[in-house]
Image 1 (tube, rainbow, N blue to C red):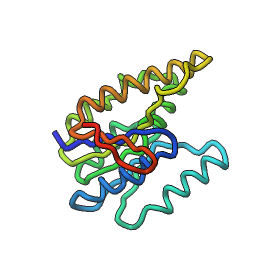
Image 2: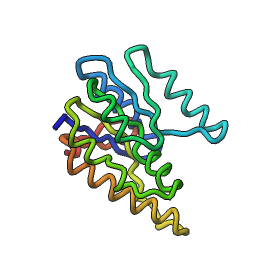
Image 3: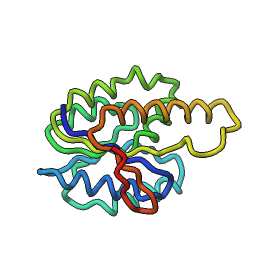
Length: 165
Protein backbone atom coordinates (compact mmCIF):
# COMPACT_ATOMS: atom_id res chain seq x y z
CA UNK A 1 0.00 0.00 0.00
CA UNK A 2 1.21 3.53 -0.82
CA UNK A 3 1.99 6.18 1.74
CA UNK A 4 -1.22 8.01 2.69
CA UNK A 5 -1.26 11.45 4.33
CA UNK A 6 -4.53 13.02 5.51
CA UNK A 7 -4.59 16.79 6.12
CA UNK A 8 -7.61 18.05 8.06
CA UNK A 9 -8.68 21.29 9.71
CA UNK A 10 -11.28 24.00 9.71
CA UNK A 11 -12.18 26.47 6.99
CA UNK A 12 -9.27 28.65 5.89
CA UNK A 13 -6.88 26.80 8.19
CA UNK A 14 -4.21 26.36 5.49
CA UNK A 15 -5.01 22.71 4.71
CA UNK A 16 -4.56 22.92 0.95
CA UNK A 17 -1.20 24.72 1.05
CA UNK A 18 0.11 22.25 3.65
CA UNK A 19 -1.12 19.31 1.56
CA UNK A 20 0.39 20.73 -1.63
CA UNK A 21 3.76 20.94 0.12
CA UNK A 22 3.52 17.30 1.16
CA UNK A 23 2.51 16.13 -2.32
CA UNK A 24 5.33 18.05 -4.01
CA UNK A 25 7.80 16.53 -1.55
CA UNK A 26 7.53 13.18 -3.29
CA UNK A 27 9.56 12.31 -6.38
CA UNK A 28 8.02 13.04 -9.76
CA UNK A 29 5.33 15.26 -11.16
CA UNK A 30 2.28 15.32 -8.89
CA UNK A 31 -1.35 14.93 -9.91
CA UNK A 32 -3.91 17.30 -8.39
CA UNK A 33 -7.31 15.63 -8.14
CA UNK A 34 -9.89 18.39 -7.71
CA UNK A 35 -13.37 17.50 -6.49
CA UNK A 36 -15.01 20.95 -6.44
CA UNK A 37 -17.81 21.99 -8.72
CA UNK A 38 -18.49 25.65 -9.48
CA UNK A 39 -22.19 26.40 -9.25
CA UNK A 40 -21.76 30.14 -8.69
CA UNK A 41 -19.30 32.99 -9.21
CA UNK A 42 -17.91 32.83 -5.68
CA UNK A 43 -16.99 29.15 -6.06
CA UNK A 44 -15.51 29.85 -9.49
CA UNK A 45 -13.25 32.43 -7.82
CA UNK A 46 -12.20 29.97 -5.08
CA UNK A 47 -11.31 27.35 -7.68
CA UNK A 48 -9.40 29.92 -9.75
CA UNK A 49 -7.38 30.94 -6.67
CA UNK A 50 -6.42 27.31 -6.03
CA UNK A 51 -5.46 26.85 -9.69
CA UNK A 52 -3.40 30.06 -9.73
CA UNK A 53 -1.35 28.84 -6.76
CA UNK A 54 -0.38 25.67 -8.61
CA UNK A 55 2.47 25.69 -11.06
CA UNK A 56 3.55 23.54 -14.01
CA UNK A 57 4.73 20.76 -11.69
CA UNK A 58 1.12 19.58 -11.41
CA UNK A 59 -1.05 17.45 -13.69
CA UNK A 60 -4.75 18.01 -13.07
CA UNK A 61 -7.75 15.69 -12.89
CA UNK A 62 -11.30 16.76 -12.14
CA UNK A 63 -13.23 14.14 -10.18
CA UNK A 64 -16.37 15.52 -8.55
CA UNK A 65 -17.89 12.02 -8.43
CA UNK A 66 -15.49 9.33 -9.67
CA UNK A 67 -12.71 9.79 -7.12
CA UNK A 68 -11.85 6.08 -6.97
CA UNK A 69 -11.34 6.02 -10.74
CA UNK A 70 -9.16 9.14 -10.56
CA UNK A 71 -7.03 7.55 -7.84
CA UNK A 72 -6.53 4.47 -10.00
CA UNK A 73 -5.84 6.53 -13.12
CA UNK A 74 -3.19 8.64 -11.34
CA UNK A 75 -1.44 5.76 -9.57
CA UNK A 76 1.74 6.31 -11.57
CA UNK A 77 2.33 9.66 -9.78
CA UNK A 78 2.08 11.08 -6.27
CA UNK A 79 -1.26 12.82 -5.98
CA UNK A 80 -3.25 15.27 -3.92
CA UNK A 81 -7.02 14.98 -3.46
CA UNK A 82 -8.61 18.33 -2.61
CA UNK A 83 -10.98 17.68 -1.00
CA UNK A 84 -12.85 14.75 0.48
CA UNK A 85 -15.65 16.83 1.99
CA UNK A 86 -16.48 18.51 -1.33
CA UNK A 87 -16.49 15.07 -2.94
CA UNK A 88 -18.80 13.82 -0.16
CA UNK A 89 -21.12 16.78 -0.75
CA UNK A 90 -21.32 15.91 -4.45
CA UNK A 91 -22.04 12.26 -3.67
CA UNK A 92 -24.70 13.05 -1.06
CA UNK A 93 -26.48 15.61 -3.25
CA UNK A 94 -26.56 13.01 -6.03
CA UNK A 95 -28.20 10.68 -3.48
CA UNK A 96 -25.39 8.13 -3.68
CA UNK A 97 -23.81 6.16 -0.84
CA UNK A 98 -20.18 7.23 -0.42
CA UNK A 99 -19.27 3.81 0.97
CA UNK A 100 -20.35 2.18 -2.30
CA UNK A 101 -18.05 4.41 -4.39
CA UNK A 102 -14.88 2.31 -3.85
CA UNK A 103 -12.77 5.12 -2.35
CA UNK A 104 -11.27 3.10 0.49
CA UNK A 105 -10.50 0.18 -1.81
CA UNK A 106 -8.82 2.50 -4.33
CA UNK A 107 -6.69 4.02 -1.57
CA UNK A 108 -5.69 0.58 -0.31
CA UNK A 109 -4.69 -0.53 -3.81
CA UNK A 110 -2.49 2.50 -4.62
CA UNK A 111 1.23 2.12 -5.14
CA UNK A 112 2.10 5.84 -5.42
CA UNK A 113 1.73 8.19 -2.42
CA UNK A 114 -1.44 10.19 -1.92
CA UNK A 115 -2.23 13.26 0.17
CA UNK A 116 -5.89 13.92 0.95
CA UNK A 117 -7.47 17.14 2.22
CA UNK A 118 -10.62 17.06 4.32
CA UNK A 119 -12.53 19.38 6.63
CA UNK A 120 -12.95 18.81 10.33
CA UNK A 121 -16.69 19.42 10.63
CA UNK A 122 -17.68 18.07 14.04
CA UNK A 123 -16.43 20.87 16.28
CA UNK A 124 -19.47 23.13 16.08
CA UNK A 125 -23.07 23.01 17.14
CA UNK A 126 -25.47 20.29 16.02
CA UNK A 127 -26.92 21.46 12.69
CA UNK A 128 -30.60 22.36 12.59
CA UNK A 129 -31.56 20.27 9.55
CA UNK A 130 -31.40 16.62 8.59
CA UNK A 131 -29.18 17.06 5.50
CA UNK A 132 -26.57 19.06 7.41
CA UNK A 133 -26.61 16.52 10.28
CA UNK A 134 -26.23 13.64 7.80
CA UNK A 135 -23.32 15.44 6.11
CA UNK A 136 -21.58 16.07 9.44
CA UNK A 137 -22.05 12.43 10.45
CA UNK A 138 -20.87 11.02 7.09
CA UNK A 139 -17.89 13.41 6.96
CA UNK A 140 -16.88 12.32 10.45
CA UNK A 141 -17.14 8.65 9.49
CA UNK A 142 -15.27 9.18 6.19
CA UNK A 143 -12.50 11.07 8.00
CA UNK A 144 -12.18 8.32 10.61
CA UNK A 145 -11.93 5.60 7.98
CA UNK A 146 -9.30 7.44 5.92
CA UNK A 147 -7.35 8.44 9.05
CA UNK A 148 -7.25 4.79 10.14
CA UNK A 149 -5.63 3.90 6.79
CA UNK A 150 -3.29 6.88 6.79
CA UNK A 151 0.38 6.72 7.68
CA UNK A 152 0.23 10.34 8.78
CA UNK A 153 -2.57 12.70 9.84
CA UNK A 154 -1.93 16.45 10.00
CA UNK A 155 -4.26 18.98 11.62
CA UNK A 156 -3.99 22.47 10.10
CA UNK A 157 -4.41 25.25 12.66
CA UNK A 158 -3.83 28.90 11.67
CA UNK A 159 -1.71 27.76 8.72
CA UNK A 160 0.46 25.57 10.92
CA UNK A 161 0.70 21.79 10.52
CA UNK A 162 0.11 19.88 13.76
CA UNK A 163 1.05 16.21 13.51
CA UNK A 164 -1.76 14.04 14.90
CA UNK A 165 -0.59 10.63 13.69
